[in-house]
Image (cartoon, rainbow over all chains, first blue to last red; front, side, top):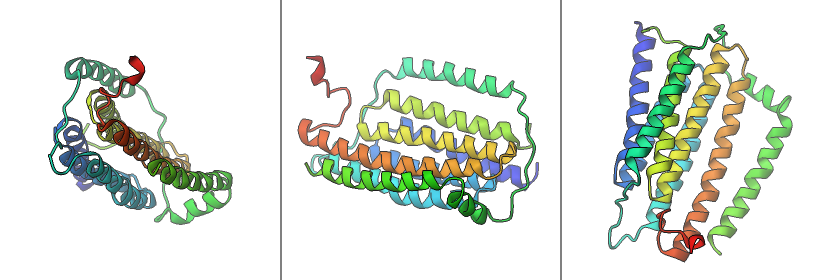
Length: 162
Length: 103
């Protein structure tokens, strides 16, 4: 058990524990902040997998963008004056049984599969390779995603202020 | 068991996936349902990057993970705009009270 394994378990416990709190806590604002912790844990897992650029993008887009958007959503849809921040849950028991069964099948299936693994050696930084891939093989996807983001920008603005 | 390999990352991602599904199924607030969706997308991304490292696919898995992050951002923006509209019309974002189609 070397230092890599210890760091992995720290990040894994952070991720799964805070994700559990996200789906069980009653306070929406608390859930948003636990989601922040989950995203940080996932970022750490990306770094452990050698994906440095994806980790940075995860921090910038998820923590800086999506989470702020979600918190705005919480603030705009709850009457701030008569605090109604708490939110209940529905059908906890059947959902827990169903998800537990599904998770058990999933985990046992992937633990019993013989994956053909071969530890690839990544370059020290992945940025150069990702840039070359993006400009050569994935250039059409890149352009389509650019158009999609423009459509989303216009669409979100026009939907929200109707 | 204690030496971290591919299986550890896959177990983490499937746990995140199950928690996300649990959140989507049980929460009443629409914003919380969105949080569950973000958890599921993160689980998929962990799978992509783990197989990119251990499956010897080069950087392609990381590329797909970047695209998934972009799509998640787009999805969150549109979904929150829809939630704001729902709030304006129904004065609530609880998904079990928005059942006009049932009547």
